[in-house]
Image 1 (cartoon, one colour):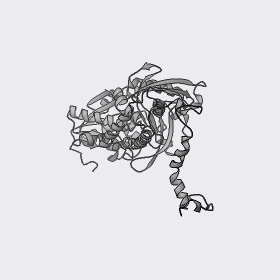
Image 2 (tube, helix red, strand yellow):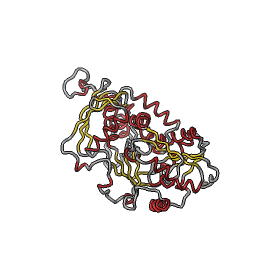
Image 3 (tube, rainbow, N blue to C red):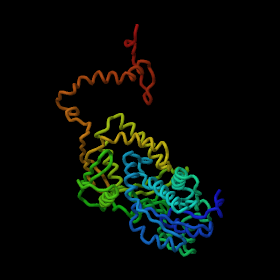
Length: 422
């Protein structure tokens, strides 16, 4: 029950972003629980957002501030696994926020062990998905830890309430009544929710977008980029090898210049309601398209089709916070098995918000020009297709002979008696 832990918590590790919500959680925890607070910030590529967080956390009442640079771990162990899976949530969302939460929560648990904390806390609202993602990870890694979710306890019910509380406690925040958006930033994406975006008819003002230029203002000349993969993992851009995080950062800058990676969608939250959000994922969009292009060249028909089914489930697991689950681990085993031949180079053309495939090559390519050509060849006799079509269409033929109805057609039935046996 909310509040039932009051008086029972000695030390808590708070997932601290320095945004409006977590900024006011520190003084609230002190006055409500009277416990020691360790503010933990994960550097997942937020850049300048991390400046001044330690001073702010300590001034707000935290006894200790811990910052961990997790960019390479995030890129290699989480983002590139997500990329290889091909997962996309509800046709558009590349899961930038969802994939980050289990990593943050994992390190929260580790810090709790190192610091002797008996509780963990997060700033996710009681209406959102993040509360589930954080807490399922806590439960999977150490169910002994107590969990504090202030948004499910306190009197604050809106971001305007939160602003008033921050002013009352003297906590400096960057949000205002005019810039009330809830944003989440990391190496993979930047998300925007709340404020006027809660009206799905509202067209986002150009000022909302912070990571990408407008496609209308992007360069008038296209730019080509080549991405090299080894076993499904991107390793180089334009012939230059980079670490996972550096590679994503490079493509973010490139994609941003050309207005790539903007998404405006209404999605189904795990907790049962719909929400509207904007996402900017320039590098991730480029990588996702490149990876799919290479898979189209090297994966056989049956494997690719089944992998698409797996991707759908994988995306659902990530969205629902089930990263540390047996099923996700089992699906990764299948995905890893498919990625061996996903080795090669993809060339893309970037132009005004579009990522246009321009070429792909691989030593494991299943494409054979001598098989696919419309001209004369020695490997495929086109006359063989007639027998294949007869066998492939046999169920349709039997259906017609049995005079079974065809949906959407109201045609007189011909006399098939001559096909019947005596």
